[in-house]
Length: 112
Length: 110
Image 1 (cartoon, chains in turn cyan, orange):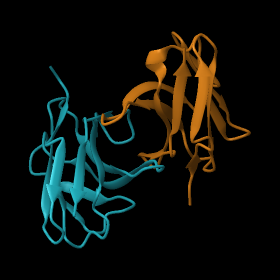
Image 2 (image 1 turned 120 degrees about the vertical axis):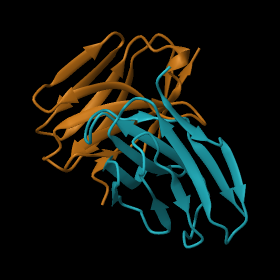
Image 3 (image 1 turned 90 degrees about the vertical axis):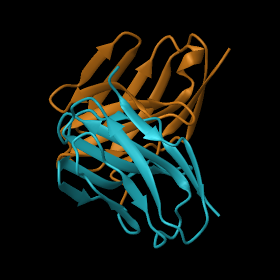
């Protein structure tokens, strides 16, 4: 069963703590992406990676960091520097950059 | 700078009728357009796409129309079914990245 998994589905953290969101895909896709969705807004690109050991900032990268040490994994760290971290986070992958993206189920992060 | 806009936040349609979702864009360099469907607390799923060299693409109940001169695309769903109730995002490809609209919440009423 090929797909993208994100864990956990719900995550709660105290303000000031860093938190890492997991994203794994077994689709053998080269490109992976992280988006953030807020109510009434579209999907905003945080970071993307075209290939292992390479990643680029998206439109709203401040306060976030990523790594791409393996083709199938693209974890996102929400740091304490992110001013409004509470949101729904979506991971996606595609065979290559610019092609149809397949999304994971998302992680809802709540920071209090 | 919102390059892809879905100006209707919500749309309500009676079951069996046609649903028309609209999307406008500003960047004439976009070469590929996609529609995604999203249920609450789930990731979006790819629905249908169209290349900028075409003006229509059809897949079952779903048809996407592209009007390049107006920089406008639309998604037609006919007949609409209760399971079509979801948020629909249009997306456009430019510089190898996808740019998403804000989404339109479609509600199909029995």
